[in-house]
Length: 229
Image 1 (cartoon, rainbow, N blue to C red):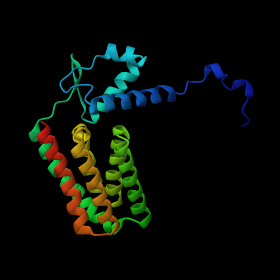
Image 2 (image 1 turned 60 degrees about the vertical axis):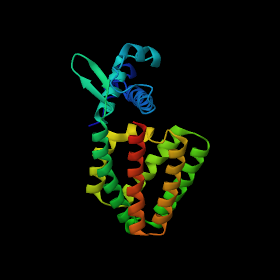
Image 3 (image 1 turned 90 degrees about the vertical axis):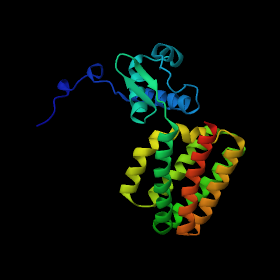
């Protein structure tokens, strides 16, 4: 049956594409996440929706969509009749999570030495070099982004879906602490050197050394957080 062109909807009747609002919510999510990670929004503090809508020049709808995403990541608590509050984490909670993450990442490093392709190892080596450059340029947001990408690449290279999912569930709970752990120049420099040592062992496909260095990297990060607190 041939379509009647007179029955086709005119442009003004078509449902608008929601991509604009979606992109806006993603942008707000990214900006709020960065504010929380950098400590601009203090743990225990309440999100002032009115202030943020004015600051970002947006309505409350995309802002609230962003808050839901950050709550799912564990950076916020959505409390009935009170609103969004930046989560607090005790030292004991962080210690519990970091120790499990350290074991998971150690295992990921061990598995990746056997499962990763030469191309993947080359990419991780290149990202580690980029990490060094971002450190030397004191570009903390870029450093943190590359840092996350390296850890993610090693986890994916392990080729173990159970490991990947288990890690993902816990990683959101400590991303703020991971970001702030490198605030001192000494710890930041040490973290870069640890990443370079990990990449060296990984590219050599030395399973035991890679596992040890991955686990120790996370535990040293925990130690720096504990000392800071």
